[in-house]
Length: 474
Image (cartoon, rainbow, N blue to C red; front, side, top):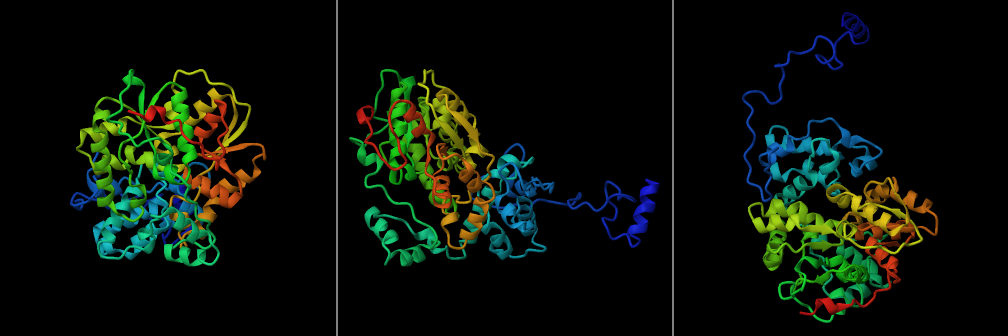
């Protein structure tokens, strides 16, 4: 230590570099940021930030201890915005620090109206990578939506939040016809470089014989009954995926039913802090499915971003509802559910490269996909990719397009381009498939479509099939 003191004195005679840290160290009870008099700020929040580890948003933000794993440039999922920009304020640690300063009110004094916090969060893709990759599980996606819910109480939401495609044919025409597309994209706040996904001519529900209630359907073997959660993306844009999932589940011995009402998890609402509206949708889903949930009927879904709502946001939105907790426990991604089924799969001679959706990797993991791929007998490679950069509406936003593509070009798009032309690209996220198609000109499949191929049917990305709706009848 004496030698180190001499060495430091030579190179740092004024003791400016990390004083008190290496030599002549401060006492353990000196210069504490949160000393004996420190008290957390009491806040009224819309999400519930309470667990064994944290109590309230202040304590949740303090989970970040500043170790900086979010500044890693390779491997894992976090933090895509930092990797693309190298800016500290766009790292999980930087954002957590800004939140702490905002809550203290000494440096950032305008609270929920803070321009600094809003700017830092604007580049956050809410990928949930920090929720799993951060050693302290700092949950920036939840902090972001809580902040936005308060920020937009005093500020107008961007026009993207108000744009909804209610009329499929008109929307398809307005966003693809050359004379109207640029204007339509500007109105919707969509980057001119983006191609908006086309609405399918018929939704999955429309192709089914009738809309039935999971409540009304009966089964001779109740334990073999499953509720297929058909999200908005796979209902309106890619019904062929819902069709494949329905047929696979039926073929391996399950009675597949749909909710009577058109339900929604509310995932897009979180992008703009619309927590009250999202909570209402979740309440509706819980009430509609309550009987089946009590009976132990599993819910099987296809879109990781939507299914993650039931594992994460649902428990923060309805923390005291036992049916909501049971629904969360009984919700499964398609691959996780199907891979554990007692079924002798036919073998598929194919080479597959897999990109994991951020929410799938963070909340569910990839074991279900890899286990199912093994059962199908394919040769597969799980790509070492982070976020695709699309992240729902993030990558379509004109203000985010450049950042979105920079994130995609970090790993995903180069690896997809390098994949052999005969390899099947598999990814379960709608956003990921759009980014791959638009950035690498490669079509990709949902794993439900690959499973259907193994069962002897062709399930191309754009060739929708009419579902076998027999099991949907009461």
